[in-house]
Structures are given as structure tokens and as C-alpha cells.
Image 1 (cartoon, rainbow, N blue to C red):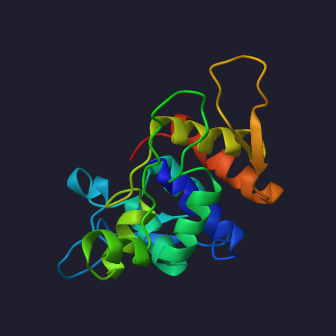
Image 2 (image 1 turned 135 degrees about the vertical axis):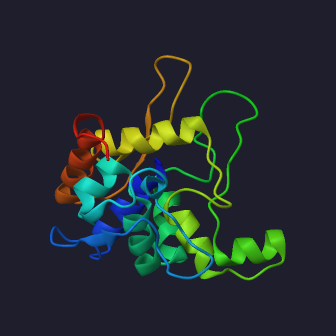
Image 3 (image 1 turned 60 degrees about the vertical axis):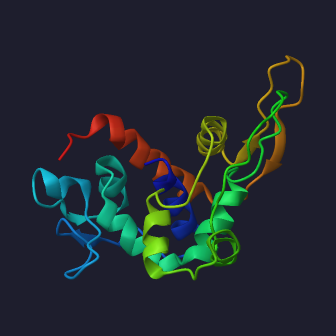
Length: 189
């Protein structure tokens, strides 16, 4: 669920996810079809009350459904693109694919359909029509690790590695990094 990093960054930077923000995970997002379930619902029922650190550590879908719905597709897509997803990284190898970060306009062009709120929920957790490449994910995670520098990966040594900088508040980076730290250090479930 690496896209949850994008959702987190977008929500913090847009002022929609504070240190006091929490959501209740009851195992699913809606009480009527179509249900949007959390992965934990299959095994344990629910995560309960979650903040960002807990939601990242537990990969709680319900938390990120709430956050994504509040942000909307345009902000999610904008931040994903800024963080290196949906376009070639510039790696010095042939045939790099761009992937797709869907928007309402993109969906209408590609599938001749209207954007549905469920599409936003899927995007918030990195599912649905989103496609990214492994090298784009590496660029995204390196951007978080190195303070906002979007790296252009290279096979040939001696090539300048930075293409741009995403302006991220120090608090945003600290919060996302802490949540990611908890992914490997907090008990699951």
C-alpha cells in the first residue's frame, strides 16, 4: 500500500490531517453496498480508533478511505504526480513506461465514463485504475527519505541524480517517516 504515503503527504500538506485527526475503523467504510472493506475485517473485525501513525503501521484502508474522500481525486492526483508517479522518471534505459495516475478527465477519456466517488476511495489506497512502475515507487520513497528531492535514477555513474524538489514541511516528513518506521516496528493487527 505504498500509495498511502502519497495520501498521507497530500492530506498533511493540504491541512486536512493534523496530529489530532483520527478515524474509526469498523472493518468496512460503508454500511451498504458497495462495501469498501479494510483488510483486517477478514481476520479480526476492525482496527478501532486510528491516527496517522497507527494507520500507516497497520495499513488501515478505512482510515485512508476517509482521508482520500476528504482530499478528492484532483489533490490526490496532483500530489502523486509531484512525487514522481504517473510519468517517466528519466532513467537512462530505453522503453520506460509512464504508468497512469487517474483523474476524472483521464477516466472519461480512457473509459468513456464518469468519475465516481468509489474511484477516489480506490485511488486513496493505491488501487483501481492507478498504475505505477517499481522505479517510480523507488523515486517516491527516496523523496520521503531525502527530504523532498525527486531523484532521477541512473544506471551510468556520474550523472546528476536530482531533477526537482517537492516542497514538503519538515513536520510532514517527520510524521510520514515515523509512520513508516512503525510499519516494521509496531505489532500487526
